[in-house]
Image 1 (cartoon, rainbow, N blue to C red):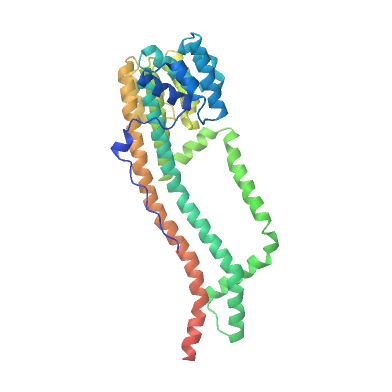
Image 2 (spheres, rainbow, N blue to C red):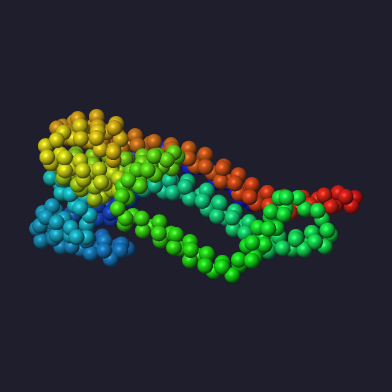
Length: 363
């Protein structure tokens, strides 16, 4: 029998604040770990290139190590490997090195990446389980209609059992599937075409607007928005803390975000800030951001206050996402389980009810 999986509980404060180096770019992990331990950076990066990383990561380790060994400052060495290092990470390392708090900034970045990764994993697990449950239920029902129902239909004909409407519907559905069995090999191709079509939507214009529509949906849509806002506030807070000018910080954050709606909003806000317009007033008119963020950007002139506010907002949105993910899983999973029971159980009852009445009449 199919068993329900308990929804994932909200993450504890101890797990959330644990200073680990998991998640994020391996080069960032290596620099943070090395600088916090007070080890020579060039030798450490070259040593990391011998570990079991991907070929791209090993090439970045080697390039950075050689540049640093040749006396190139870290900021300039980052520029040399820029094609193989994301713009956000490169800007963050340059800003963190200039502020003199490289290890602390990079550790905060890695912790934020791990937090976002864990929340996304919980989100997809909560969303995928009901879908997998429904697919398994439909597959079981289809197998019963093709292989089991025809046997029962022959049995009904041999005994001349009067059939109720539900049983006649089940037999008709079985006959329909068997008659069109020759088309079954086309089904995987059709599903693959649908999957490719959905995946191709990201390349069509208006992706940010489609994401906004999805994020207005209850349950999983609102969770997706909270995750995106947590990532946005966390990434932007680190650049602001490194004294990066707000327009440049917004552009670098835009390139690092996975949410196309907020990425588009960052570029629009950066353009308006470059024109000398106040960020707190302009962000209130952008549909990409919630109105509550406008109050944070009133501290644009005070980088420390703005960074602290963004960091607190990131943690708040992350907490909302954890709780909402747990609530969505607890709400949707019972309905998915009930739907499977209704489909498979209802069909089973419709097949055995005539036999039950027949045995009752014989006895």
